Image 1: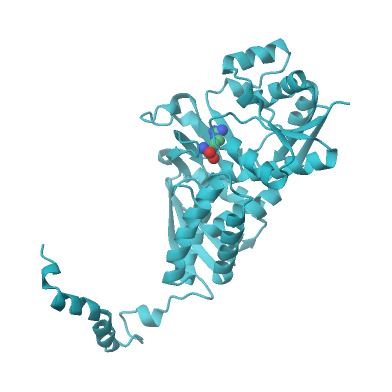
Image 2: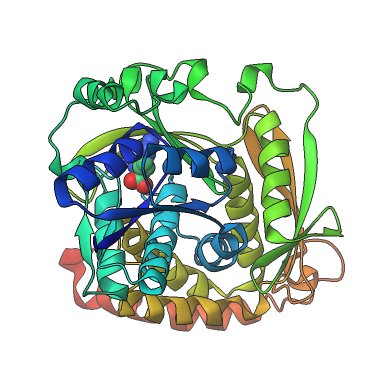
Length: 402
Ligand code: ARG
């Protein structure tokens, strides 16, 4: 009996060719698995295509709730944004897909898993390391990394074997999308001097064509998790979908990034992430009200580490567990509501309130009701400046001269 391999199947050209190629090269039975992470595709058609192309079994899993709860929202609480701009949509879906492959492989008694990643990107690392962390005994097959075919040769292979070529492969761009964002690369975008043409974007209006009237939205959080829009409680999927539509309409969420891949290549990537950008902005504004100066400063360092480990494929690592425990602890009081203004591509915080706010009007005010003891500042400054005074006296040669 042929051995079984579980393939992460997108329905695109590479993974369709992979089904046939694995049969030919390894003589294995291919089980195709497709995760629905909110990429807005006709997944029944994808499933049928897998079978038509030669998979012995094709499974579609609705992983949207799992994706939001265990991947997107924990990342939001961590404020994890790679290199300060990329909300990590693609990077977050890979460990979920790796886990799904391992689950199905165990259930079906497969000896291998497979994916369609090339040998130049981050995704191969995320998939391979993810699978290795969960099931180190499984063999990993990566056809697109092994076969050495150019795009033209892959198309020719598909034609030879009557594999339908999706219309999307006529597009000059390589696109990956889920609820947390849309990643676009290739084609004219590979010239970093060229402004992204409008046809790159699908979720966001061009800011210049966005409505002249701004939109306001209020986002409520409980312990760092978004729970309501404009006072309407809703689940994470609906909340993200609604924000993607609203902020996208106002041109919010376009990102143009020269990014550093783990494998050492600089690449140019365009992202659309309207909901993620609005949620990160709101979450950080609420943290500014509810966390102390020291918490904010240290958490920012953790956020950088957190983003790097996700980007670099270390989701299933002990390091991640440790950072996640810290982040969880920081969110105890991140509860409240943030009001944002969306206008012609800009997303600005215009209001915030929290039952556990550390902002005290009576301390901050310059009007009547001031409770801050200004006389006490004199003693405070005397002690604070003490070492500076001592040094200025003891080491006059190191005194500042400008
Ligand atoms: N550069 C992004 C990352 O490494 C996205 C990769 C997938 N992009 C794509 N257009 N297929 O996470």
